[in-house]
Image (tube, rainbow, N blue to C red; front, side, top):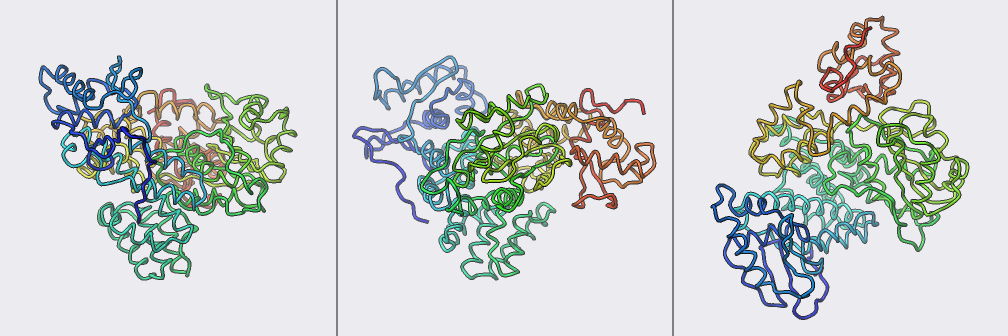
Length: 620
């Protein structure tokens, strides 16, 4: 693909810092001499955390990964002093390299550092229609001149890990560019742009899926099908897995004569859909309205098929205007909802708002407080009650995410009558009392997707060095994106802990939930909040099923035995737990006649006593 210049013309004397390739610093057209290796490691570490303090300990670890000398602190001061002299001061009132109580910080602007410019362009592409998104991502990718930091600085393990994280962001941007380019008919460019990347990253499913679609759309169906077959054999050989839903859906579409483009891959399907009805109210001649949304995750992974279904449901003009994402705690419901909202900015030109229906303590928020927050986010007044809200919703092209819905009563007054607005609900349960609602259950991540998420947090090299242990970790997380993310965050800090040791800790039921904590993020606390909100006897019954049905799927007779009742009563209990989001079916749609049910792994672990206060010992 072409590599257009992505940086504006600079005034004379401006410094240019580059990390996306060999480390270089230019003043105008003149490359500055950066000094010895250790000094360059210090500069690279400071630029990698531009405008934020880097602690003395972190710099010491980067420069001397094994045994720092007694003079390490003094040596760092010498390197910093030399860098100050080299870089000079463009503003005497604002030193470029400062020392704070948190460490050293290097001040740079977006126009001066390619890494900051890359991140800015990628963020700008989010929520755009495919054509401008492809253009912005082309500019972002054009900033890359090779592996981050170059080969010499990767001798520092800390910089090597940071370089791997940057390369994963580069891959994600390439995948987003490919999907946007495909949406505007650029399949031939995508084929050539992805060939080498697919060879270097053979297990990257989203990349393979885009390449397969590009081959198909350029008339090379046989090669496209071969891409799927090669990937299927590789997954089976390396991991004992099958391709994910998006890859399989694209394969089926090619076999039946389509390109597979509508099936999406890791989020790409939403790009192709966004804003495709220019005649929609509020869409013509306007950009997306400001959004009251949490940030979209840069390393969003998996659930491509569910994202496609979610986008289709929100775009469906003949539907109810309500979509429900359901799944147990930590399944990634809010993350997926927010990602869809970011991608659909053009479609909902009057605004996108995300509001939680639970307070910090887990209690249901009062309806007036919810409406007041929606009104503030939308910049409107007069949303004094449900009728006013529904009228406003019908008249505006808006998307309102009502997050973490506790039950039907909390949300029923806010459901639309019809019109242009859409409501997206996320809930642990099925909210069976609401109709009509387009329901999308969120399954666990597949092992390949979970591995990709873990590698993005701890580094590809660390996962490659012990792939079997990495697989044990993600399987012990039960496919929960929250648990995988917490594991990765914890391992990124505990760099001295081998993956096999952490996998051993997670596979010990007595201590697994203790390990799934990083800083103020705790899987146990997340599960506890969901448990406390369960209606009636659901918690007690889930505990009985957890302790009495083994570790895998169970049938109705096993459920009846664990509950101490007949099968007729067991059906009602299991279906109540399905409605509460505590039981799923590995076979798909659940009815009274399906033989297999399942408790999500982490829910089962908590219910058996892995969580403090889990009510498994209540009397029957």
